Length: 349
Image (tube, rainbow, N blue to C red; front, side):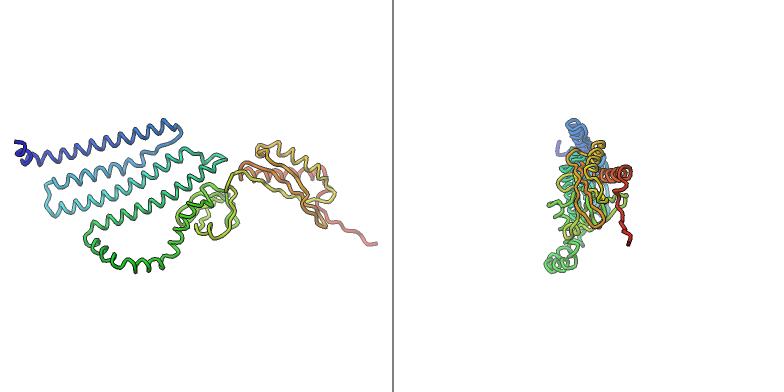
């Protein structure tokens, strides 16, 4: 009786329905697991945003394509149409799975970075993690896409035969491609080396090509530097390994700012030193670590006063230097105008 039922025409109608119901049940269970996992992360780390919506669309497409792929043999289609539909569904599954994996990596990266604060002044650890995650994610994306393209091409019989033929000459082809893509390969290796050694990190303050800016983005081939006036400087990533550059936040964000004042020999250095202390003590830009003034040079016309002041970040150090320069010049103009730089000319008798 059971065998009759399984072999009957009714089973041909029931089996597709069972596949659809099983797919729907599996989708609901999987969606529920994803939502519960996201909610647990939100409860454990209240400040972390879990962008589950990024994977919802590829997740739905992937499940729909897989259900249709299982359902396709049981549909009343001709052999030619059935083979074409199956091939199209296989490609759709590969594309959807690739899209899902890329979006999933983005979600995982966002969740991990949610535990760190890039906006904080002392954000060295956050910048290290952000740099590692960004480059690792991009490397994995490239690998996933290459594997997906390979899997998609292998579904075509003609391409599969071509692939088998190419394998026989892979050694020669590899050497030819290696010479042809020397610079590209070197650039990719440089990107991986940047991720490992980290001479630069996301949000580092650097001086590149004479421009002051922050590292905004690091890819496998180039680095985007956001300059102080909102321009973007695109720099080949190999430049950071082959040429010297300044990194103001390599080990910490705090800096020492320098201000040079040129004055006449008659300037009272102690009074200027006291004024410097008064200026920095009255501003929150100073982090209270260092303030000093020294006479660092003397020429036949002027002396050089160098003020050293410390700040918690590069932005604060720049603003503090500008403030100190302005206030010290104002102090000399108001109190010791005779000590400003001048050229002495003696009349001949």
